[in-house]
Image 1: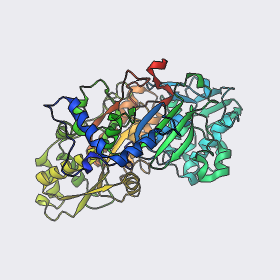
Image 2: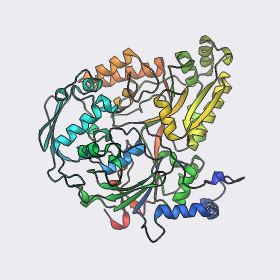
Image 3: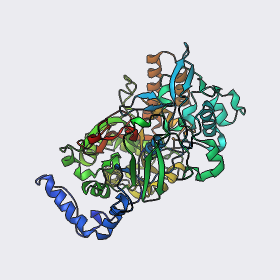
Image 4: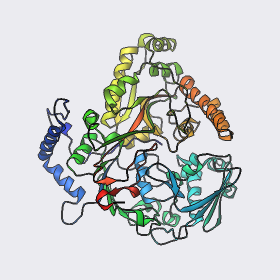
Length: 567
């Protein structure tokens, strides 16, 4: 899943103050920085009014049990449309699938209380809870899943994540239009409480897929009645642990505990406010001044503060299945030439980036799939830092010493971390190749639109595994994948992914996937991995619990609780 989040700042940041910069010094205790922060916040009179209105300081609105800094304004909460992590976090709070991930990243029974798997591991039969209801009181049936999944797979829906259903028999053919009759797809409602799913091949991670956001059911009568407005408060009918009671753009979303949720007794929080802030300094100001309780997105921690924050009890970091990388638009010159792409990749010093900029303990990435995914997958290693070879390749492509190289731009979205990395990459390319790169910063939604339309030269990207298997990474770059966004296509790569899907022996399957990844990294090179992520959350562990490190960086709101209330 593409997981970088951005949005609009709600108050001025410290960086906006003339001749001032909030930069921690290693020679001062952190308390002094908080005092300095408090001083600056005291100057922001109008910001204080905004803060009060956000958190219910006045008598007309109570403060939520949990105030979360999640990142940018969500693109959508429609499971068929969601492509980003921050949108998914909200969707998981509003909708419940057959299964759900717990706070340790493990699949648990959801609307399906149990399931049977056939001996050939191609047929799954799910038995639904009779007590499960939609928020309007309608019972949840097997047909709700069937019609929801059909909606996502319909070509007219144009869901970018429709491919995640492709392990199901004939799902891909239906999505592509070669199979017209949905009854040929391996999804059957045997009765109101029994859903049967037939797979093309044994899929060891299928139960994980059943947790995933695209598999979440929607209340189709509401979708048909309200059209695009069905996701708005007052119209949304959902089946998850929380209800959406307020959604004011660039202001906040408020969630309230859903009393009709099948597991409501184990949901501890009554209300949650989600604030759409993408600026890291602003986000930390909100947290430090106790406006917010939880910084949840990895990009909302100011890089300059990380060395000191790592020493604090409220800083929580752990590795997870995700990486930060560069995409090259292979449909545009000069990146239509793989030698140019490889030359660029060979002069990017990953160690310098993690040492100088990210500083949270990230490991440089020389593969797209993190080593150890699915337990023991060992990906091939991409070529490393090699400026001499890079200059040779660039000369072979017709640009000796960078002469005659066209004007290009590097696209990134408006986070301070992304800007810092962009400046570093710009410097490396000039220093080693004599290539001048212009930097292009865009607001998150505009950036997404640009990458989707391939309206860029090369750009920063990130990916977080949707489930713990290499295919969650490698399927991104299959021809025509909605997550490809590079224009790259390689028949041998596609065929290897297909062969891996049909392979029954687990170790042979991983070997085939490694062969495919070698083509991606060392032959086609439509991407350049930079580093593997560290998940970062900032919160007071003496006040909140239920947040645990896990490989998917998934922290469901349903499991978060106030320590004083217990669990």
